[in-house]
Amino acid sequence: MAQKCTDCGKELSFWSRLFPSDRKLCPGCKNARREKIKQYVSKLNEFGTDRYLTPQEERELAALQQSLGLSDEDLKEAKRTLANLRQLTKNFDLARYEEKLRQVGEDGYLEPEEEAELNTLKEELDLTDEEIAPTCGQLVRLKRLTAIKNGQLPVLAADILLKKGELCHFEVSCDLVEERSRTRYIGGSQGVSFRIAKGVYYRVGGFKGERVVDTYKQVTDSGTLYITNKRVVFAGTKKNVTYPLHKIVNFIKYQDAVQFQKENEARPKYFLVKEQDSIDEIGLILARLVS
Ligand SMILES: [Zn+2]
Figure 1: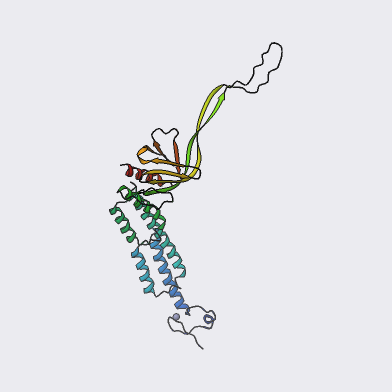
Figure 2 (figure 1 turned 30 degrees about the horizontal axis):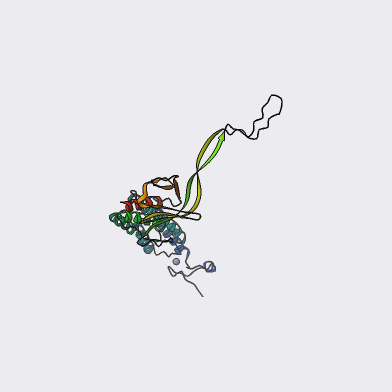
């Protein structure tokens, strides 16, 4: 049975029939197709020189494929390049979105108009929720800080016993760091043996020397720090520490820790906060509660 070229209808030679492929083409049509593929690839490379594919370029490529009558199978290799270019484009768009988020969040807050700007950009760039998921933590944080700033404190179901009318607004896991002191003596000697000889007095006991007190800081417990509308509570595995809000005279924030100073506190306590972002939130909530 004679087989025909699917493009021009010419009868195929014995040899071309031996090699089965999706499409049976005569040598002339095969060449013509190859030229068309080249044309498509050259357009694709032209669009790809800036490593970014605009929606307009996407449309032009689709139209070109159509007008050249090329199948996806014909463009198998070109489509891999296209997929690559789309990925580069997506990465660039995501970086733009992240930069915008960084910009609007620079002051720590996300105002409604800033949020609208972000959403507009997301739509413009055709980004899905899934694609921007890695930035969600930052977004949520900004929204939370903004809400606190505007006086809307979150209310959590805390696993500490709350008093009547007490609301828990914050919790974070942390380590308790306390100042410790160690007393030592310098210049002293103990248990020194004396040669018992004529003319040498034996002195009983060691000589203690000068008393020196070293203070140092040490992690003494780990647990959870809670802020309620009445107090700051640290619930640790070994001990609890409470600061009634009205007794806190100062709040000090360090790079990785916070300190609540109350009147007549003998030894300062520090709370090492593992989630860096929480430190700002603690300060904001406290400021809100005591004002
Ligand atoms: Zn043909």
